[in-house]
Image 1: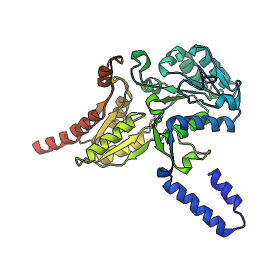
Image 2: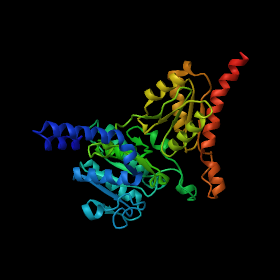
Image 3: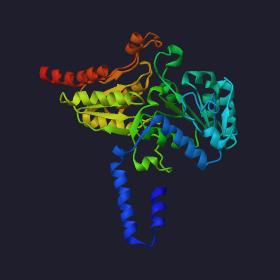
Image 4: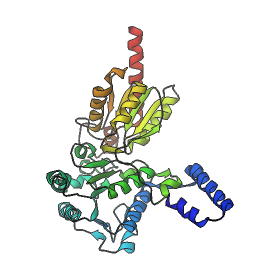
Length: 371
């Protein structure tokens, strides 16, 4: 939007030129999906850069975020641009720098704390839950804690049980936190900007395997004012036969499954949750009331998972619309194996989603035929 305003000011007094510029802006937004792509890594980096430039209270802190430019190069170039006072390298002490970040947030700064993997956030769990998440409530709204905890979450590849766990359900269960789970470059840019601007603590769960993936981005997404609403899901693909809810890397798998299913005559609606807490229950239930079937997909453990919460919401609010039992797909109920063949069996695959959707769709057909 700022870019459009600048163009209009530059063209003031020349109606023809103003009209031409307007047409160019509209055209760029209409066709930018094929003209411009951005990796998730660059989307995160640019969001950090723009928010640090816009607000001097924003600063970064974590292991290797400065001199090494980030373990995954998300913070590349930011030390040179903003200096060591705003891009702070820390010792290997998650409890230490998470606590410092919460304290800084108490005093009005806006820290962005990077965990090299969210598995290491367990070292800082007291500060995240007892200090950051609960302080606003315990102070009767007098203390805001505008802090972001970000980093890779869930399974990567060959890194074993202690570096592969998904913490979406863990943090999603805690009042006082907001929990965001980007999939695309658009998600990464818009949600990270929203997280940094938010007055409450935000847990921002990225996926290591998505960092290098490229996605189409529009001119609107590239504008420095772009921001996505927290708590609003996105319907990535519309359908009429079954609803698939998912987040992070599994969105891509669900879209692949939907394409396969379309060739077999099954129209699947794919919902990218974007936000675990708050959860967009209205979008989920509206979709289920249209399709009459639900399949949930996540990488985390099955018990007490995100999918379980979605199932409960649909049973409570839309049970009468269901034409088949809900199908839940999750990671295996075991710590992540190290062996590659076992690791693949421990996380959902595209074929698992296809089979679950077929069960949901064909089961109701067989029951109807029997009846």
